[in-house]
Every structure is written in structure tokens, then in C-alpha cells.
Picture (spheres, rainbow, N blue to C red):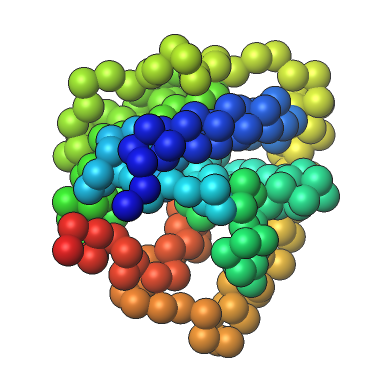
Length: 232
């Protein structure tokens, strides 16, 4: 049995490492917020909900995007973090996913509320989600939409950072407004949906998958076995 103090040390080291990457989110156009999920969120709760964070854990995130630009946001996340070798790919095995960011959920204001079904695992996860960057109002709206998982506190000032001015982000948003932005959104949507469909066709899905890809939400949880068996 692992020492709880040792796990807490691993958790804190993981958090510090992840926060070193936070500045990269300032470069992503139309990104509203970033929220940490997965083991980094549940790890703070302790057993049985936490205690699953370990040295090979990746970093799961929920990314808030402007409505009408969700595929654009994902495209830039994939590019920026992919070029730097920081993005977890679906084909990664466990060791290669260590300390990489898993972009498995993108939402807009129209899809903030997690779609059914969700059980005690999802409730505990959403109660422990950790906002780390973005627009404070959008984050509050996100948690208000998910009031089925009530929280006593939204922001932990130790990890939270409000959106800072970014010339790169503002310049990209300026370029990608109007018809040009619509064309880019539709172009990246076509490429991404084609890749997603190919992945599904190749049988990457597992137990009761939660997969959604449309103009308001991109959710990629190909296997929810851990969620359903988390308390057993």
C-alpha cells in the first residue's frame, strides 16, 4: 500500500509541473477557460475518490470555447501542445502519456452542463474540478450550469489565474473573425470529424463510451469503465 503522504507529494509535483504549461493557453484564440479534471482533481480528495494519481498520470482538462469556434480552439490546442510534445494522443500507451495534456472535453456556453448519464463518480469529479485559467465569469457560469454537483468553493487562489492580455491571442482572434474565421472553423471541423470517425471505425471505443462531436461540444471518453467501477 502506498503512503498517502507520498501520493500527496506526487500530486503537488504534478500540479506544479502542469501550471508551468499554463502560459501556453494564453496563445489560443477564442479560449474562455481551462479546468483541470481527472486524477489531478480527484487526487485532492483522497481515497476512495482520489489516491489514483501516480507518476505516470496525464493531465485531463476541460476547455471552454467561444460558441461557433470550438473546432478552431481544439485545432490550436492540438497544434501548440502537439508541436511541443505536450499533448497526449489517443494511441499513446500509459508511459508515453505521463505529464502530457489530455484534451478530452471542449464545451461552449450552450453545453456547459454535463450530459446524462452521470453517477457518483461524475458528481465527485465535478465537485473537485480545479479552474486554473480563463474568464472568471465564464467559469462561474460553467459551475452554475453544473449545480447538480454542488461546490463550496469555485476558485483556489493557489492555482487560479484570470485571463491575461495576450497580443498573440487577440491578433489571431482578429484574423479569424467573420467569413475567414467561419471558413477556418468549417475547414478544421471537416478534418477533425473525419479523423474522429476514422478512429471510431477502427474500434478505439471501449466500455459505454461518451463520445460527442458537434458545434457545441467535443467529448472524448472512449471508455467509462473506471467511472462505473470507481467505488467497487
